[in-house]
Image 1 (cartoon, rainbow, N blue to C red):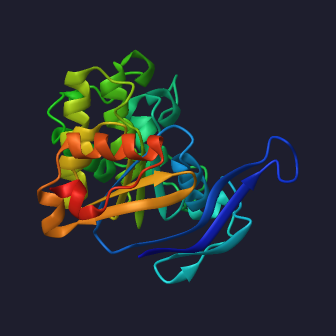
Image 2 (image 1 turned 180 degrees about the vertical axis):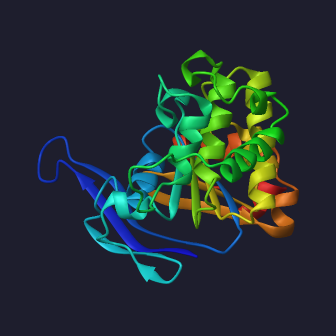
Length: 264
């Protein structure tokens, strides 16, 4: 589904402020796979997402999505196949527009539309059904301004919008970090439900070691623009938050733990 081969990104190259954000990074994500990405600040996680989405152009390497080379495709074209949810709930919705209108914008994304009424009755039923699964009662508030919603409710709407047309890839950029624990738990549950129901390919950045251990099929740790290690399958089932914290400490100390040591 998603393939990155030897992707590198350097900011301020040749200056005292040079930063090698990604260094010959390679990654393959299979159809329907859910990957959690962890790493300290400056590890290259956001740059990874920006390169995949097209917000940042890679200096070298190749990026493929569903077998198609998108290395030089502009961000607006990639957005037809890639959904993204940011940490700030305000970034994914349009204030001043209702829930219905925001969902309508998401529904027509990538389609050629004329001057017509965008929300049809069939789409309204579709919106109602998608919101009903959130168990937040928002299906009965389609005419409410999204600016009046709580952070958790707004992020839930953003998540539904990002998955409404079933993108080939969903990027979740610490999408629960700004929420209170209860709202974060609800959004995580919705994330899992949508990913499983639509068989989505998901890559999620998180600073929560608990989320990294509990969500998805594979855990990847980044450091200094590289993937330091990844764990999946039976090995991942034994993974605990303390193990990941120990790994963080080993990177900070300059020492390395083998996967066998990490899981012992």
